[in-house]
Image (cartoon, rainbow, N blue to C red; front, side, top):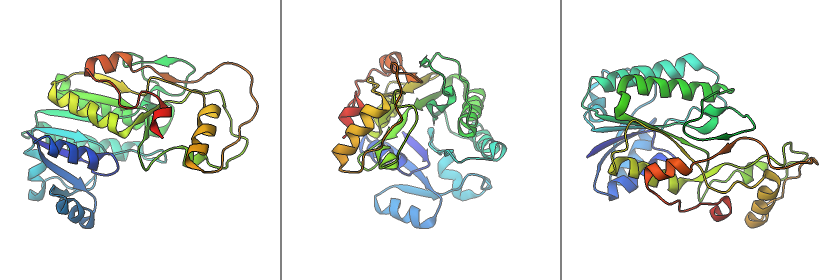
Length: 270
């Protein structure tokens, strides 16, 4: 199968390499020609592409001649322009509808659930409060409008990998709030195996969540993680009570995917 991976960065590149190893032909995108040269050196076909570019250019033909489109373009927490991002994604998906593309996977985020003190699964209603969350939900709706039962939405929790862990961001910070808020994390490799399962098992027409099955509180986990990473531990304000905050329950989604997490606990990720 020819698969287009749009957004071949921290998650997209190892995903593309894994799919290529599995026998698929990969068309990857990077925003710069330098980035494309790096991907070509790894044996990938690369098309220089930035969201918002005119899609009529013949250089984009390999993208739209693919069987599957994987959209992995992070909105980012600092996103401020709702209309620009969603409009550009709409243009891309409209072009995909009129092409050879048969299926779409959109890598979204659990931020579409907002930050309520509750447990959320793939069946929970979305209620985003951040601009990023609102944009992701809008793109989800566009994907589902154009591809209906031929698309699957994947909503990962906070992403962790060998070279990426939120403990680095919190290192040495003082008087952090919400020490009892639960942690929702998922490992890069588990996102990759989930996408591969969607493809191999033809799991289309679903919205799925992805998170580790264990949810320690922030104070316990990030204090422990700082020690493992030999970095300055954060400190939290004193707070009484039980664990609280948004908890992502991925049990049913994992059953649909038919996988076992390689990293079922955040404590396995270091």
